[in-house]
Length: 178
Image (cartoon, rainbow, N blue to C red):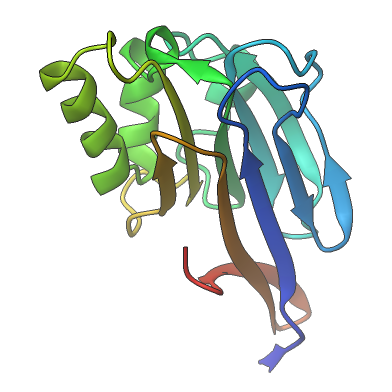
Protein backbone atom coordinates (compact mmCIF):
# COMPACT_ATOMS: atom_id res chain seq x y z
CA UNK A 1 0.00 0.00 0.00
CA UNK A 2 1.29 3.47 -0.87
CA UNK A 3 -0.05 6.92 -0.09
CA UNK A 4 0.45 10.10 -2.12
CA UNK A 5 -0.08 13.76 -1.44
CA UNK A 6 -3.52 15.09 -0.58
CA UNK A 7 -5.50 16.73 -3.37
CA UNK A 8 -7.25 19.78 -1.96
CA UNK A 9 -10.96 20.31 -2.55
CA UNK A 10 -12.93 23.46 -1.76
CA UNK A 11 -16.66 23.93 -2.28
CA UNK A 12 -18.21 27.42 -2.36
CA UNK A 13 -21.93 28.03 -1.87
CA UNK A 14 -23.41 31.44 -2.64
CA UNK A 15 -25.89 33.05 -0.27
CA UNK A 16 -27.80 35.54 -2.39
CA UNK A 17 -28.30 36.63 -5.98
CA UNK A 18 -25.21 38.80 -6.29
CA UNK A 19 -23.69 37.65 -9.59
CA UNK A 20 -21.41 35.09 -7.94
CA UNK A 21 -22.15 31.40 -8.48
CA UNK A 22 -21.40 28.18 -6.68
CA UNK A 23 -17.98 26.73 -7.47
CA UNK A 24 -16.07 23.54 -6.78
CA UNK A 25 -12.29 23.25 -6.92
CA UNK A 26 -10.69 19.80 -6.84
CA UNK A 27 -6.98 19.24 -7.30
CA UNK A 28 -6.53 22.60 -9.04
CA UNK A 29 -9.50 22.18 -11.41
CA UNK A 30 -12.45 24.60 -11.28
CA UNK A 31 -15.98 23.31 -11.82
CA UNK A 32 -19.12 25.41 -12.23
CA UNK A 33 -22.83 24.58 -12.60
CA UNK A 34 -24.31 24.92 -16.06
CA UNK A 35 -26.72 27.60 -14.82
CA UNK A 36 -26.62 31.39 -14.68
CA UNK A 37 -25.37 32.79 -11.34
CA UNK A 38 -28.65 34.62 -10.72
CA UNK A 39 -30.65 31.40 -10.35
CA UNK A 40 -31.57 29.62 -7.11
CA UNK A 41 -30.83 25.86 -7.07
CA UNK A 42 -28.99 22.99 -5.42
CA UNK A 43 -26.04 21.91 -7.57
CA UNK A 44 -25.21 18.20 -7.41
CA UNK A 45 -21.76 17.04 -8.50
CA UNK A 46 -20.65 13.40 -8.57
CA UNK A 47 -16.88 12.85 -8.42
CA UNK A 48 -15.15 9.58 -9.38
CA UNK A 49 -12.86 8.59 -6.49
CA UNK A 50 -10.46 6.72 -8.81
CA UNK A 51 -9.27 9.88 -10.58
CA UNK A 52 -11.23 12.84 -9.09
CA UNK A 53 -12.95 13.57 -12.39
CA UNK A 54 -16.53 14.84 -12.47
CA UNK A 55 -18.74 11.92 -13.47
CA UNK A 56 -22.05 13.84 -13.40
CA UNK A 57 -23.31 17.35 -12.71
CA UNK A 58 -26.91 18.55 -12.54
CA UNK A 59 -29.14 20.91 -10.60
CA UNK A 60 -32.27 20.48 -8.51
CA UNK A 61 -34.89 22.96 -7.41
CA UNK A 62 -34.66 21.32 -3.98
CA UNK A 63 -37.25 18.59 -4.44
CA UNK A 64 -36.20 16.31 -7.26
CA UNK A 65 -33.16 14.08 -7.59
CA UNK A 66 -31.97 14.26 -11.21
CA UNK A 67 -31.60 10.89 -12.95
CA UNK A 68 -28.00 11.76 -13.86
CA UNK A 69 -27.21 11.78 -10.12
CA UNK A 70 -29.58 9.06 -8.86
CA UNK A 71 -27.77 6.34 -10.80
CA UNK A 72 -24.69 6.73 -8.58
CA UNK A 73 -26.47 6.24 -5.24
CA UNK A 74 -25.00 3.36 -3.29
CA UNK A 75 -21.81 3.16 -5.36
CA UNK A 76 -18.71 3.56 -3.15
CA UNK A 77 -16.56 4.61 -6.13
CA UNK A 78 -18.31 8.00 -6.22
CA UNK A 79 -18.49 11.08 -4.02
CA UNK A 80 -21.31 13.66 -3.95
CA UNK A 81 -21.23 17.39 -3.48
CA UNK A 82 -24.56 19.15 -2.89
CA UNK A 83 -23.92 22.90 -3.10
CA UNK A 84 -26.64 25.53 -2.90
CA UNK A 85 -26.59 28.56 -5.17
CA UNK A 86 -28.49 31.63 -3.91
CA UNK A 87 -31.04 29.25 -2.38
CA UNK A 88 -34.32 30.39 -0.88
CA UNK A 89 -36.50 28.54 1.60
CA UNK A 90 -38.39 26.87 -1.27
CA UNK A 91 -35.08 25.30 -2.39
CA UNK A 92 -34.50 23.60 0.96
CA UNK A 93 -33.93 19.90 0.24
CA UNK A 94 -37.15 17.91 0.47
CA UNK A 95 -38.75 14.91 -1.16
CA UNK A 96 -36.45 12.68 -3.24
CA UNK A 97 -33.49 15.04 -2.89
CA UNK A 98 -33.82 15.19 0.90
CA UNK A 99 -34.07 11.39 1.14
CA UNK A 100 -30.97 10.91 -1.01
CA UNK A 101 -28.93 13.44 0.99
CA UNK A 102 -29.96 11.76 4.24
CA UNK A 103 -28.92 8.34 2.90
CA UNK A 104 -25.45 9.46 1.82
CA UNK A 105 -24.52 11.39 4.94
CA UNK A 106 -26.41 14.63 5.59
CA UNK A 107 -26.56 15.24 9.29
CA UNK A 108 -26.69 18.04 11.82
CA UNK A 109 -26.56 20.98 9.40
CA UNK A 110 -29.41 19.78 7.18
CA UNK A 111 -31.43 19.00 10.32
CA UNK A 112 -30.62 22.50 11.60
CA UNK A 113 -31.86 24.05 8.34
CA UNK A 114 -35.05 22.01 8.57
CA UNK A 115 -35.63 23.11 12.17
CA UNK A 116 -34.96 26.78 11.41
CA UNK A 117 -37.55 26.92 8.64
CA UNK A 118 -39.96 24.71 10.60
CA UNK A 119 -39.94 26.91 13.69
CA UNK A 120 -39.06 30.43 12.57
CA UNK A 121 -40.53 30.19 9.10
CA UNK A 122 -39.43 31.95 5.95
CA UNK A 123 -40.54 35.48 6.72
CA UNK A 124 -37.40 36.27 8.72
CA UNK A 125 -34.76 34.00 7.20
CA UNK A 126 -35.34 33.50 3.49
CA UNK A 127 -31.92 32.62 2.06
CA UNK A 128 -29.48 29.93 3.09
CA UNK A 129 -26.09 28.62 2.00
CA UNK A 130 -25.53 24.85 2.39
CA UNK A 131 -22.89 22.31 1.35
CA UNK A 132 -22.80 18.54 1.79
CA UNK A 133 -19.80 16.48 0.73
CA UNK A 134 -20.25 12.71 1.16
CA UNK A 135 -19.56 9.35 -0.41
CA UNK A 136 -22.44 7.87 -2.38
CA UNK A 137 -22.38 4.81 -0.11
CA UNK A 138 -25.62 4.77 1.84
CA UNK A 139 -24.25 3.09 4.97
CA UNK A 140 -21.06 5.14 5.27
CA UNK A 141 -19.97 7.65 7.88
CA UNK A 142 -21.62 11.07 8.01
CA UNK A 143 -20.53 13.51 5.33
CA UNK A 144 -18.93 16.93 5.74
CA UNK A 145 -21.44 19.79 5.98
CA UNK A 146 -21.50 23.57 6.17
CA UNK A 147 -24.50 25.88 6.62
CA UNK A 148 -25.01 29.62 6.92
CA UNK A 149 -28.23 31.57 7.25
CA UNK A 150 -26.55 34.92 6.57
CA UNK A 151 -23.53 34.56 4.28
CA UNK A 152 -21.69 32.48 1.68
CA UNK A 153 -20.38 29.10 2.87
CA UNK A 154 -17.04 27.45 2.13
CA UNK A 155 -16.21 23.82 2.89
CA UNK A 156 -12.56 22.73 2.79
CA UNK A 157 -11.46 19.13 2.58
CA UNK A 158 -9.09 16.92 0.67
CA UNK A 159 -8.64 13.55 -0.98
CA UNK A 160 -5.72 11.29 -0.07
CA UNK A 161 -4.68 8.88 -2.85
CA UNK A 162 -4.25 5.35 -1.55
CA UNK A 163 -2.85 2.68 -3.87
CA UNK A 164 -3.30 -1.00 -3.11
CA UNK A 165 -2.11 -3.63 -5.62
CA UNK A 166 -1.83 -0.98 -8.33
CA UNK A 167 -5.39 0.35 -7.84
CA UNK A 168 -5.70 3.96 -6.63
CA UNK A 169 -8.68 5.29 -4.74
CA UNK A 170 -8.97 8.76 -3.22
CA UNK A 171 -10.15 8.81 0.39
CA UNK A 172 -11.99 11.97 1.56
CA UNK A 173 -10.56 13.74 4.61
CA UNK A 174 -11.55 16.88 6.49
CA UNK A 175 -9.01 19.69 6.21
CA UNK A 176 -8.98 23.17 7.65
CA UNK A 177 -12.24 22.92 9.58
CA UNK A 178 -15.22 25.13 8.85
